[in-house]
Image (cartoon, rainbow, N blue to C red; front, side, top):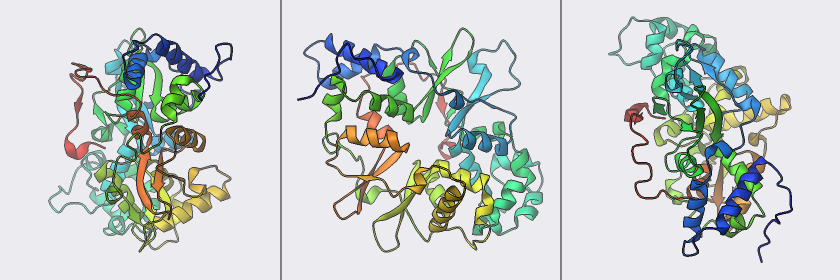
Length: 418
């Protein structure tokens, strides 16, 4: 029998208060509604202004004239995947849509890095500024002398030391890589939008985080990420509505959503840039590193891990080439040496299809990871489950729900989306 939290019991956190709102709304929903329809109705009734604010050290904005080097340091220092970009040329009285030019992600910077790791096209112009070179993905002749004609393609251990010390990396500004932003122009929610809208954007519409703007002051009031939603759900454990849903097994909820053959993976002896290229091509946030000749994962490389190539390139100096295995070994050694806590220091975190969604949510929240791999009894990979997958099983999009919400918010061309 599922025990519900009592009304006298004090909520454990601001996130639990949101869960209590859902609990109260659940009790007054029409009895003929299915549990999924009830959850949709509950989340539609709660404004996003009720979502707890992001921690102060994660409510970061990046100036559009910041260099890529500065942006990487800011994202890595605050342990965040993305941040809104403030247009430094916008007037003081600008509206929020003119104040921000987008959200820069490690993914966008990764795209730029990958372009620098590929040989320039023979048809590319031989002149032009470093900014133009960065925007088009072509290394200028000056930078080609710095990086070497073959170093980018070979990705030797010294390649990233050369790259991060080059003027191209130091002088290219965040606004120069705006073509790698996920949305154009800036997409944000208003404080009066509903939780349901936010949850759908973070799941079906594949946004990693959603800014919430205050129209009165024209600035961002909150940033809600997929991981913040998972933390909220973890804090709702024990509430009746959550237990009804949370005690379902992964297989009952249709998870994982892919077959074993569809898993995007990289082998241990492949270049680490192959892992990031696969993430870019397949639009995934991480890949398992597989032992050659087997189907067991020895580690995971996520998109945010690219910052180790940029913030500590010296750890690869002695490698003739940076394979996926070398990457994992060097990063783990670096983290241990600097007494840093990271999911990369733990054993591969996995789950089984008969685990409950509650168990998975609590594990993801406690480990601060964004994906978990599903394995069978032999430890072979069966699938992967991401934060987005979990949120997508919580709510569904009613027919015609968004209407003209996306008018003026056009996805970028296919080859420039992350």
